[in-house]
Image 1 (cartoon, helix red, strand yellow):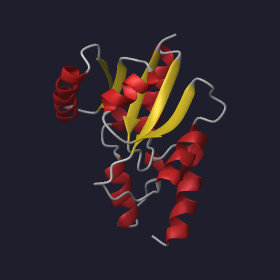
Image 2 (spheres, helix red, strand yellow):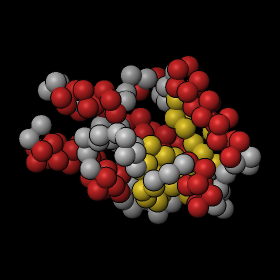
Image 3 (cartoon, one colour):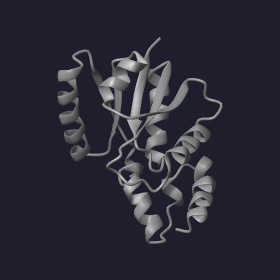
Length: 162
């Protein structure tokens, strides 16, 4: 059975994240979606909220496992028993950043296989940062969030009074 890990902060999950995860299902038997805990970042959505959103987005899909993780990606890959690490890329800047991380991680895990999945052209501009900025400045972000969780994101923001 082939398994991959797709990790990120998912603050919040975007249509780009959803697209990459769906593409992973075309390649792998199991996809581990790992919400990385970064204590140096201040998240708009709590870890529990992000876990809920991803769980709801992929509810009924037994081949997707949503989990949290704190630490290095290579430790996560070893824990999950797979060398396959998926990275979504939008442009050359993303690719160069991810490629540098690949070579740094490869030193720690020689069997690492990083798979770059380019996003769809319609999603080139989509990022969690864009979503958060749109929320902060009270701009429309409906097309940036998967429809299945848009209502949940909106409700979570109302509870925060953003």
